[in-house]
Length: 486
Image (cartoon, rainbow, N blue to C red; front, side):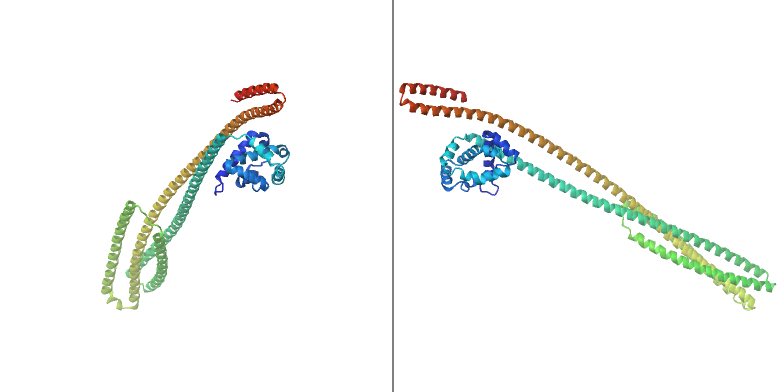
């Protein structure tokens, strides 16, 4: 009884509640309607054997019987008390019943303890039924423990599934963020590529205009060489050529600044492209590297051609200087024309350098385009991975919903089974109550006949013949009742 789980106390309360339902059904219904549980008033009876309930003489007498017979006397005394106080308890509510058990019943049998003990031994007590109830209680508790273990297992599985869903949601959110960030960077790179292409187009246009003006200057120089006779016209042309050369130098400076800005932007684009994540797919990277190598080889060949052209121009320029160096010392006008020719050659040389730089920029633009293509392939792969993770998440959510529906279905079936079991138990208890009531009536009749027999014996001292006849009749009636009870 005094173990931490108090399992024996629960068995005793279950058995005592069955006795109340069996022998005092109206009082049991009243207790149930008032939510007055058996453990609220009967726990101390089994734990202290009425030592805290009755006075010391009555309690010691009950304890002596307990030491000889066991817990049976506790059930009998409890039922006897309820039978004595059934009418008063039927008229009280839960608070009144608790006060009645605490104040009225302990003092009720101080003057007549024999009355309680005799009434207790008249209570029906079936030891086999008590053993059966004990087994029934243990099976119910075992089922409850198994159900609790199953519920705990399902709760842990549900918690693990929720944690897994949360991790998958976090991973999908991170992938979505990465995808959005990649799309944003891709859009920014596309915009910057568009700006660079537009600036390259402007620089090409400026270069074409400067080349046209240089050609015009060359044509004017040729005309001046042909028209040496007209000195005044030559001076005006020289002044115009000087102005055009100054303007071409200014435009060349502007084109150089534009080229530097484009080079800076190309460097920034290279840094950004280097900051992007690497790709694990080796085959595609090898194809892209092969394409880059081909483009690089083409660019190298073009650069070599440009350097060769620059060298040729430089040699041509040196030969021209060596040929015309002596003749241009004759007159200042010839010297001015020679200076213009020198400036024209320098402009051509700078033009060749500008073309080389433009080809380098084109090469870098091609590299950036290939890098952009690689990044677009990476983004496509990340999108595919994100879509696959989303499909997995949907599958797991659907699986979780299916498990929840299965759990609800199992709970519903368990509730239906519990209701059916309770109905069957109640029907069996009602049948047993009817049979026990019939047996109690028969036993009461037997007790009345025995009392009449005792009275007949007393009267038989006065009239032996009449008493013998009455005794025979009583014996016959007792035999008949016994056969009926069997």
